[in-house]
Image 1 (cartoon, rainbow, N blue to C red):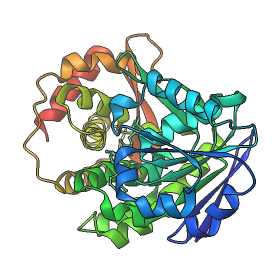
Image 2: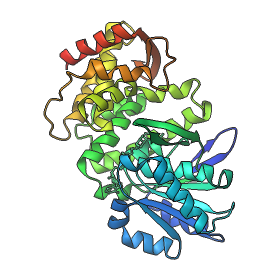
Image 3: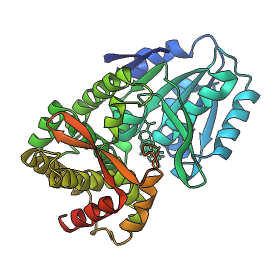
Image 4: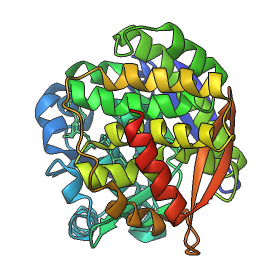
Length: 352
Ligand SMILES: NC(=O)c1ccc[n+]([C@@H]2O[C@H](COP(=O)([O-])OP(=O)(O)OC[C@H]3O[C@@H](n4cnc5c(N)ncnc54)[C@H](O)[C@@H]3O)[C@@H](O)[C@H]2O)c1
């Protein structure tokens, strides 16, 4: 089991990675107070023995699986249930699931009695390499993703790669979308992905989980509230979100296409080194090929790019600002007037 410390101005969080992380840490965390478990219907059905072994007698809230349930109504039900269970300030909330459970569970922990301890136990690849670390919590509101939330660091994150054995291939690909994001920021991860032909090979993925978490922890430590360095973690995401909306692709697939297009734009604008950018695009192609998919219909992208204007990272002056890869291990921001951004996207679609 590897230990990674994440120190922010407000707290010290610990992240444990390995098949023994849960066995070694969970019993001690459960001792001595009333606790609360949040999970979703799929995870609860897949892991009855796990819940029985560790959470027998603990209040368990099972949320219907799916992004559509990451909303205020669910948050209210969870908080009501926490209150009914008689949780105290010293209680802990254990969020066992993917990014949806981690995000809403983290927010419930931040709000209940103005903040109780939260332990994240991520069960998807996306949550293990990315969302369970860093303390961003949120729910969606009125069709806008993650618009209501808080920065609230978990006290511990327990990452057991064994959960990935039951994860559908499309969800694996979604997590690989985020791993490719780290490749765009970290030379070591970039080299590993360049060399590897089958990106979804389980041992290879396990070896990357810790590397991605270490990278994210370092970034979050330097800039918890996203005023500088943490913006790097949005590479591929500004355009990725627009693609998700216009094509109905998954988040990971949207990010992969977003990364391809933003890298293409950065190369054309002379911001990204061509040889490096092409290698990064090659990794994206390998990741996209992991599951069979027909060519997405990008005809609605110009219209949905409008949404990029209301992205939390933009300032509302008709400019689109993207975090883009510049060279191996180096990123920068690229701002374009909205019309030029749309034009760049349309060019990039043609070069896919
Ligand atoms: N907080 C952050 O920093 C951050 C970063 C990236 C994404 N996110 C958020 O994360 C969410 C996406 O996360 P996600 O992709 O994990 O989605 P998710 O939580 O919806 O999980 C995807 C699917 O996998 C199922 N699942 C979970 N674990 C499983 C397992 N071990 N075996 C089989 N099935 C399993 C879930 O029930 C669900 O159907 C989005 O809401 C996004 O906004 C947050």
